[in-house]
Length: 206
Image 1 (cartoon, rainbow, N blue to C red):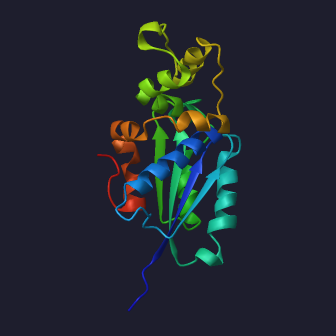
Image 2 (tube, one colour; image 1 turned 135 degrees about the horizontal axis):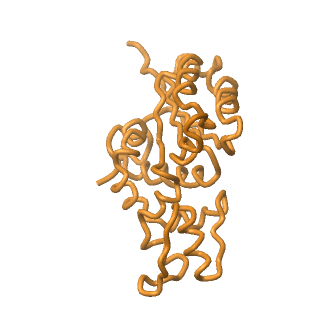
Image 3 (cartoon, rainbow, N blue to C red; image 1 turned 180 degrees about the horizontal axis):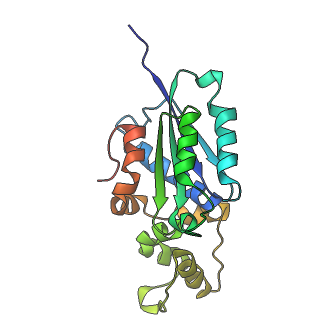
């Protein structure tokens, strides 16, 4: 009998804020599995740390860590996690050519490349659970002042209303872990269902 094909999942995030969120999301998805385990054999996560030389850094990591003898017989599934505002930073010459990067990854051995593009930004995803955000920073709905702009600008404004500073990066960990991930996943099922299907074989949202 032939051995079952092994699978390795690679999750690449563009920055530390996204990395923290996806770490939390993976924990949530695992709990949605009946066995409380993922069905893939291995997961490798990498924070590319910004869009500067994003493609070259990511491809180098993939070659050095994944496209090697150890994983020769593995099915390799790649998730690219990024913000829409980065993709549309400059419509004529975007900082990352995602179509070209996908082609290069497949040329290097990736069997499937899946894009998880946060609508506008990861902060806009956070704001899908505004109730938890307001509670965590101590603002009631009746006391909230009018805020507008990008998700990042809205969070900065909300924090400033209570003399706090919203910081991107790994400092958001305590904040992210107060979010209702179930609520966010239900509202963004179309975005995250592919991740759930690969990791647990079904949708994780209710």
